[in-house]
Image 1 (tube, rainbow, N blue to C red):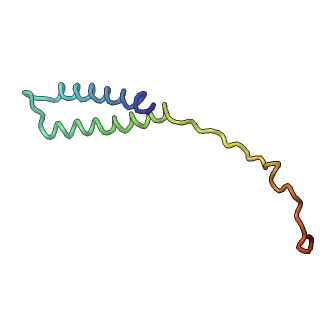
Image 2: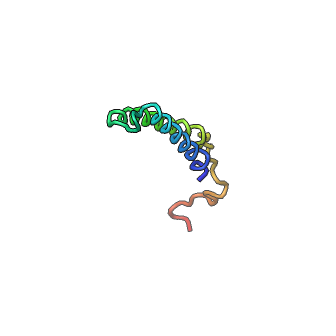
Image 3: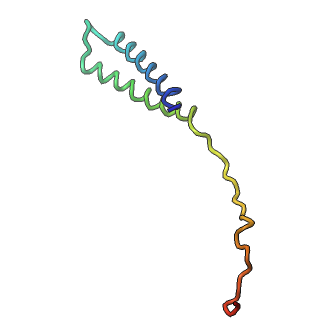
Length: 86
């Protein structure tokens, strides 16, 4: 949930501003041709992928060093018995 509010919400706002800028630059007489829509897609997909990757690196979990396991002092409390012992 923190990733959604801290990261994805900001990316959604960035996407809205990017799309508004693209529409403003690429429209002709209030219309967008299909070629212009393909140009917008070619811009938006790499921006989206790089933004999500960068944000996941920024807000994601850090690698934690593995702790060396320590044997429990309670394990193998009793000495091994021979098969003939009772």
